[in-house]
Amino acid sequence: MNKAPGEFLSVLNSRSQDIFKRLVERYLETGMPVGSRDLSRMLAVGLSPASVRNVMADLEDLGLIAAPHTSAGRLPTQEGLRFFVDAMLEVGAVDERERETISRQIEDNAGAGRVEDWLGEASQMLSGLSHGAGVVIAAKSDLVLKHIEFVRLDATTAMVVLVGENGSVENRIVTLPPGLTSGQLTQASNYLATFAVGRTLSEARQALATQREEQLAELDELTRRLVEAGRASISDSGGEAPPTVIVRGRANLINDTMESEDLERIRRLFDELESRSGLIDLLGDADSAEGVKIFIGSENKLFSLSGSSVILSPYKGANGKVVGVLGVIGPTRINYARIVPVVGYTAHLISRMRNQKK
Image (cartoon, rainbow, N blue to C red; front, side):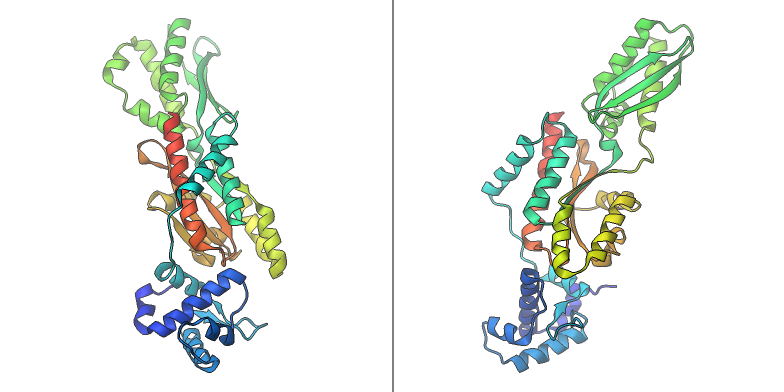
């Protein structure tokens, strides 16, 4: 279990903190082990390589850095990176010019303006900016409904047809109240469409749940009963389905890995993404998240085998409900200071665009 940042800060003096911070920053920049001689040249206060080595030995005893078997230099450990991110990482805001660039890239390249297109462009953009893989994990309830209709099958049954903007189609069989006319069937379809079309499944469920009694009272008894059956069909849709996963920029991870000769790590990462077994848990974690979350190495079980870092932020639908997460997957030496604010802003942008679409 990782120690709290305060535990390390209490035992590290300012010189040790400075040496550790510079070592991690140098590692994040180059991806290479850092030696005492290089560190001694970086310090504002002159220290001999021997003095730096003594400090590095203390940092190693604390588990913050370690020596790879191929080098005399040192690398931050997973716990060391976590300490750096929590206690020392300096994260700025995304400037206005870059915000405009991000917004323009997503909006201009998103085709007809469907939510699915925005998510795909967000994943592509994050990949390009991070030189890692951009990822979006969307709950099935984020599917936006394009059409809903009752289709009569015989005198006693009908099929509820749900069509998503992404072209997906779901059907549910419902029992018709005796004596229901074709006009009442059409009226029930139109009523449900008023609340559902253009909304996600979760938003449609919320809208139907809060409908005013006087609106329902405008319908006759048979039509109301059919509307209730249609509302139940929407509530049942997508309950246990796996989330949608959009990944862009896998080649970036492979190119990076070819330099570090760690292709097995990336193979495991791709296997983990394809299995999707832990994605629902990741969405669950996002429900309670405030802002950007950083998972380093084995901290997230979904990516534990690949040893990757994952920077994620939830995006929201109507009523502030989390409907998905987006972010970046990369090596543990990813540029955290650069990527964290970009991921946070992109999630905010997608949330805003989705709500403006309503």
